[in-house]
Amino acid sequence: MTAVHHFLEVDDLAPSALEDLLAKAAAWKSSPAAVPHALSGQGVAMLFEKPSARTRSSTEMAVHTLDGHPIYIRGEEVGIDTRETAEDVTRTLASYCTLIAARVFDHHLLERMVAVSPVPIVNLLSDRAHPCQVLADLLTLREDLGSLEGRRLAYVGDGNNVAASLAFAAALCGLELTVASPSGYELDDDVVDRARNLGGTIELVVDPHEAVKGADAVYTDVWTSMGQEEETQQRKVAFAGYCVDDDLMATAGDQAVFLHCLPAHRGEEVSESVLEGPQSVVWRQAENRMHGVRALFTILVGADG
Image 1 (cartoon, rainbow, N blue to C red):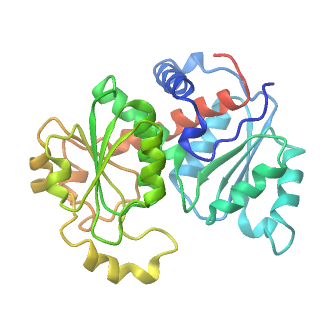
Image 2 (image 1 turned 180 degrees about the horizontal axis):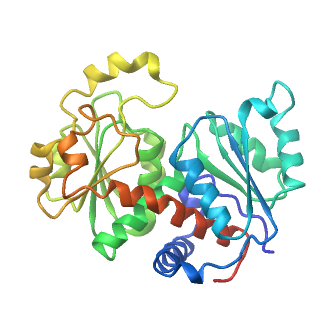
């Protein structure tokens, strides 16, 4: 087994490793019989502080198809920092499992786990990043656009964890990224600086029509993420005019595909007609969650394939 390598954000992978991961994911998607038994007889601990649909299902199936055993653990079952510390939970799970994957509220918790873990830690979502989602996004874009170098991605909405991971992923792949957000909801400056330091081309604008004009792909996410429910009404006011609807997709052009990490709030950040329309690739994007994380796990355990 190779040295421990954790995956808390997309740029924990070098560009060449990310390219290798996407190639593996695409190959195994088209030829399921070629998927290696990379986790044969091994366990993967899946710790969920937040509920999930796609993340849990895709990760469990990824482990299963690699011939491993997924162990689903709810946050209240281990009581991190109430029943026992995050460090103690991590050491215990690592004594049984080859990988620990966690969906958490606070990104710092993942960093604490990394500090003591002898096995790789994978971020299934935190308040700062959603890197496994972005693996699926890149795989989907490759399927539709071919090479991503020089292509343009427009993200419309909140500068949240998904937008941050997209910024880093775009930089690693040569995608040009434009993010349209209302004032006060932009990507953090440190995210923009980090993406640019990776070589990324990223532009922040206010007008969503300006952002999407001529884009190869248009991406959005919910206006109010889990844990922000008390801000729902305030955000609906702030994001008025940021719905990806038929008019906005017409500005983008017929060549543009539409992506959403789901769950979607029809009539808020996206119209029903766009979500269910011919330019939408969101269901294949959701499917690709499994293919992306499966390839990631093989790389983290040093498996050939």
